Image (cartoon, rainbow over the protein chains, first blue to last red):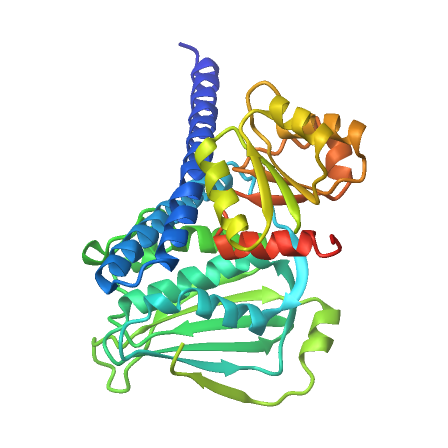
Length: 260
Length: 121
């Protein structure tokens, strides 16, 4: 077989595979609607705590299936360069607070979230749903890897016409062997599970916004090998107008949320 | 009471959306056959239509085109599990119609439907 013919066949195979994933993922979304919708209706009528607990498990797993379906679709979009952004202007801090509220049920007992916000609020022009997805991914990871009585600190800053968002946890830190592959597909920590798609998708979303995302371990004062948590940071360019709206007044707003 | 017409070829989706909205005081008719829904539309007034896009026989956009021949001011919202067909139905996309992505949380569905029927009596 000619090399060019082989190349064409591979391209066709790749396209067919993506089409199949697209169709399968779309078809998976439909049954999730009645599962989630009807379970939530039933949940409202239940008073027995054991039955409520069972309902919670069904809902949690239906949402997990939903998330997985969306992640698979996102990966095919990223790999076929068809991740489109629907940009709009919105307040960054408002969105961060909404994201925290959305994943508060994943927060381990005794953990808190601390906010270190740069100023009153930062106007950004970005894809709100996609940015929310990145923050949810980073927060979910921080909550998953944090230890008991740990803290998750979310900081926003404006530096050199860039908005910088940093999410720091006090968990087990990142395994040095994983570092080079951290933002690749299917990288997971065996004992914690997950699909390992969240960081890959987050990186693609941030880069599509012209920004970058990186990770580091919290350094210890004694320079030992002990890891005391991980820091995930992303930066995105602000346009001039956004910068002017956001940088005044430059006050420090330190809030702490203990009971989310 | 605000009246909603839901058309989705999946009976279970119809049932779940109908129950969620009825629970919040909306009057809901739901059909899994677009042609039966169209016949019903000739006889009744609705404040909002919620139409699935991908349906056998007649898709949601085609159904909407037929409905507009009867009432061209009716409010519509399309349900989608991903398929959009931008190129073929540019007239519908140019109208700035609302889209709801399946699956949608009950709370979000109620919020969206309330917003879309704000000016209905």
